[in-house]
Amino acid sequence: MWFNKKGDQSNTSNEYFTEKWMKEWFDSINSSEKYKRAAKHWNSPILLKFEPVPEKLKENESVGFYLDLKYGECLDIKFATSEEESMAQIILTADETTWIRLIEDKKDPTMMIMKKKLTLDKGSIVMLSTQRQAAKALLETAPTYRDSKQQKEFITEIKEKQEKESKHSSFTTIQKGLDFEGFPMKLFQKAKVYGIWNPADIDLSRDREEWKQLQDDEKEILIHLSGLFLAGEEAVTVDLLPLIQVIAAEGRLEEEIFLTSFLWEEAKHTEFFSLFVRDVIGYQPDFQQYHKTHYRTLFYEKLPRDLNRLKLDHSPIAQLKASGTYNMIVEGTLAETGYAAYHKMLTDNDLLPGMQEGIIKLKQDESRHIAYGLYLINRLLDQNPGYRDEFENHLEELLNDATNIIYEIFEPYDVVPFGLEKEWFLEYALKQFQHRMDKLGY
Ligand SMILES: [Fe+2]
Ligand SMILES: [Fe+2]
Image (cartoon, rainbow, N blue to C red; front, top):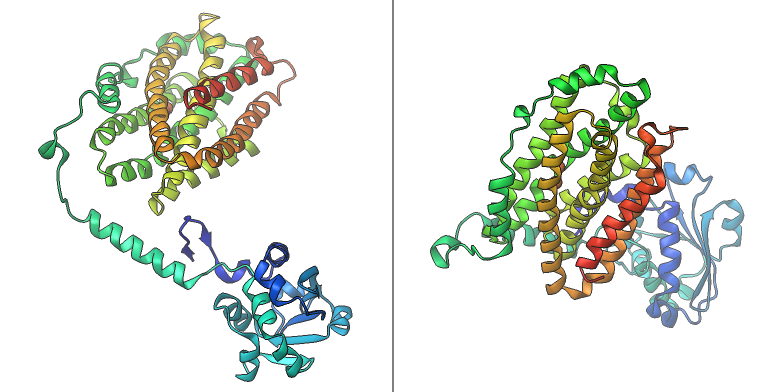
């Protein structure tokens, strides 16, 4: 397992020779100008045969790949059965490892036949030699999951980064002093005033009494929402660190100083919801049942994926995507909508005063977190305007997850307790999102 420059994990041999790989190859051949030119006289279907046949090909009752090639174009690629084997005019045979090496190292297949690494089971070597450039260009178009040159560059980059970070060449406070007028330090001043509340000081005794008087369906929706917030707050606590490390590594001291309060506050939010479970609900319900498909996609997969990518990839687009997922979608769209739900259930009905108090404090903290996110995104987009479209596409994909989560929340209820309405929340979520997009100049 290794990571390419984009931070994608690639498990090399497992991803080769699958249906997906085959489709990618088909597209790659037909979009290669080099292949089109080199193979303009090639009119012979070819079979790339595997001996022994790997399990994944056996599953498709196949012995290899059949490529229907005509004058610089690939008309079809399919898993080859014995029928295709009889149609192929050229059959090249090798084991799986050799095929992978051939593809990854962009070897010349004609040369490989001469070296006896590859067997020509059908067709003439003379014919293949005349089409040598075409055969080479064909293999060059095959998708690869390991590029040794790129891998080396990547390792060098990591080493340089480690070396740079293993010593201090200067200190901000010594060279120019802290920028007290900049936005990050102003946010930090606010955090020290409004963010110092203690979850353990919030009185939950009236909540505990009122909880006993609630209807079962009212308890149910409050437990449901708590189950989403508990894991949500824990996830943002756990997943924020890679972003802080990138900011620190870039020497943005003022931002890092603010981020210390950010992480501390997320930890307190996790504590607050946990106290509510312990002291008001009074037992640990089966929260897991409320984590449905779309919730899992966002909180179990995409949030940690986008933040943890920063451990290896500090690029502006990686930072944009991480902040987009974290600040724009999880905090700015979903958490905000969740607070609105608490407000409608509790404040409008004068219920659970401790929970109401906690939500007000949380919301204040979140407004600073989102404000920082917008600052960060604006800074990155100003310096890298070329990423605007890619970033927008990323947000659209995640907004889709977020709205699906809202659908998912309302799904189990025929009549939603406290008179909540799905449409109102969807509209609210979209309004929050749009409001932030406006601030980013979209
Ligand atoms: Fe939070
Ligand atoms: Fe937050």
